Length: 326
Image 1 (cartoon, rainbow, N blue to C red):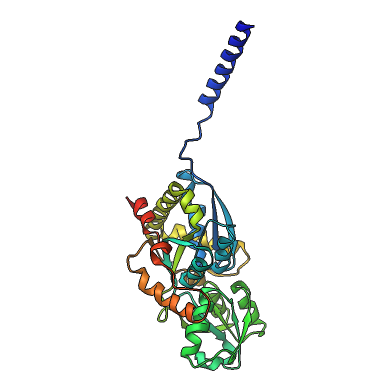
Image 2: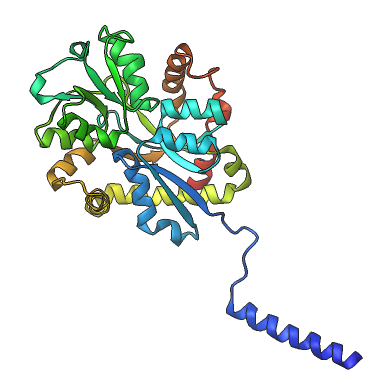
């Protein structure tokens, strides 16, 4: 019986040894699967490109995609801890930090030129003030929606109730304009360029002079605390993707254009190029973020959309980008 036990142990050792050679062991630092949220408008396309570039796989990162019409929906998913990472502008981030402690791990792009007020071409409206008494399509709760209602409309002399806000997703607004169920839309690319190219709308302003609209990659604090190695590896991938946007824009454009055409958008390459050119992609972590964020937070606090001005030392995590860059 003693010999039987020794033989069994030897056999098990041989099997285990064979498996060890055939299958690589999972290292102690194995990276966690990322649940990546992104919006299907032009703001989310740098993230979409990253997911399709193969850069994540090269660093051993696995991911699940969670696509939504606009970033504020990704933010809500993150507050509910359904998604780990996602992009959106400052207003949505600040609300997400207030509601769920979300943190910024990088700035991906600036999109102020992509956000516009577009009016129906047949109405010949040229100023925001002329929207008084009109139906305006707006994705309520989004960053562009908040900027329009809290900043742009009041600056044009429009008070709440002076126009009828029609709540809808940004990807439904062009068809609503074409059907004349709304008179104007507060929208982002590529939908603005599509409306203009098809003779449906006229762009009367973009947001760049009001807000450059940095778009941040945010994370849940839980994911960052539990998986710092994964976050750093992920940010290294963004640094590599940045080189593609700078050195190989044709490759990037092909991937993003294919996304929109696969969704049924009849958009020419010329129209698409105009839309994409308005996105300033430059992943990093600027040192001067706090003044602009504080200004946005003050507006949100005034409008009772957050409970307090964030503690920026907790809301911003530049250390992770610095570690990835090092």
